[in-house]
Length: 163
Length: 74
Image (tube, rainbow over all chains, first blue to last red; front, top):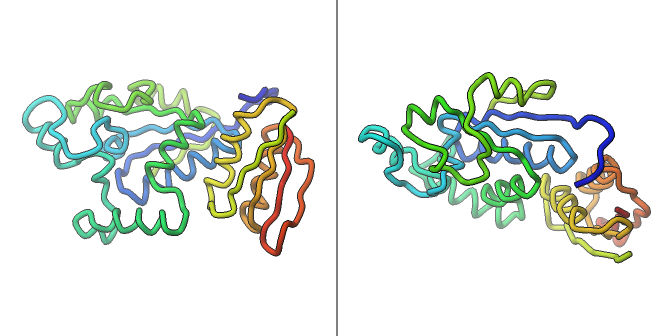
């Protein structure tokens, strides 16, 4: 986009928790940092993978009966729970309503902004293997499926945050 | 050289400077973006993030009590 002569600052966030509020925190940091010209990497692992599944509702995704059943229980972006006071999924909906009312970006809007700002998305190979998921089960913005070594390489020299 | 407008008076962090950055990305070099924003976080951060990206903040004026117009040249 713009010409850079100096090296870009970098922030890498491990999105482990698939909780609604923690995903909002992660994507707020990611978009904010990208907007002030940081290079931003998001590594989705375990529960965090739910936020970037292609199917946003509960579906039997994955390979094998147990994995498919677990995949159904975990659900997608539309099922991410609030970390406290979830009330069987009612609270995230109420929270989204409040966010809209107060003109604060909702989770899908933040994700869209992150994509537009060229935030780089990656998925964890090991947790995908446990859950029987393939790269095809995720949104196309997932650039690569990787492990710890690649994570260390890509996040080298920047801030590393675990959410 | 064209002048564009962006109203972020109703937005909050991080969308204030996210929207500004995305809008600036669509502009040609030399174009001007006039951003309407409120005092506080947006007024502190939007000019700063524009400068950090190498753009020039050419004017900041007070439109009314709480609203400011920041002119940024790409």
